[in-house]
Image 1 (cartoon, rainbow, N blue to C red):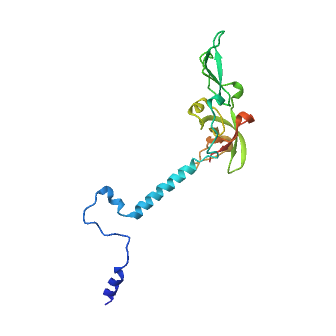
Image 2: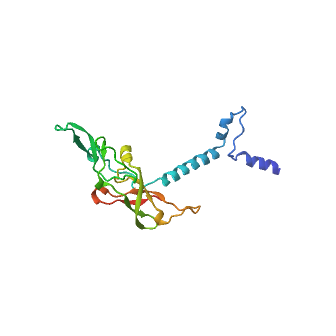
Image 3: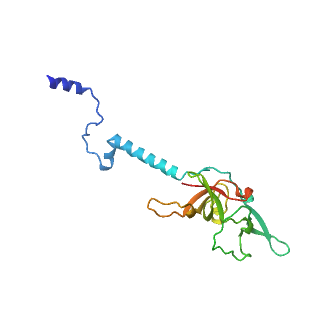
Length: 200
């Protein structure tokens, strides 16, 4: 009697596991039979993407576009008539490395004035709340244009690499960190200095 009552109760209970199909299923579709694993996989992928996005999030995600007319000044050359106009002078602050040597001035297409070259940046650590003047190592990415990155132009939103050895940051393995990325938060061409926030 107990068995029949139990069978009667279990008759209307819905189970998550469906009955096995009579026809055999190909191996690449086997994981689709169980919806819980598929859900777990998709949620794990979504979480990983969110973590990645958070890791590469920057203080200034959007910046104003700068036209080439604003960025470059046309330099006219040529004897007497000055009809050649293929040279450009960069009107924004730039960074050039220590081992940089100019090309022959006659053949130099992009001229970066000495007065607009910067070597150091004021870097703020967002968690510690301290601001330190650190030497710039390189220009990682200028959001305006790949050409500006190549020329080392420093505009608002540019990601630069700075030497943080003075801050004494240490990795989990105990090694001293000396190269970290920072984003420029001000307009250096207006203020005469570079203010940036360390990306941690």
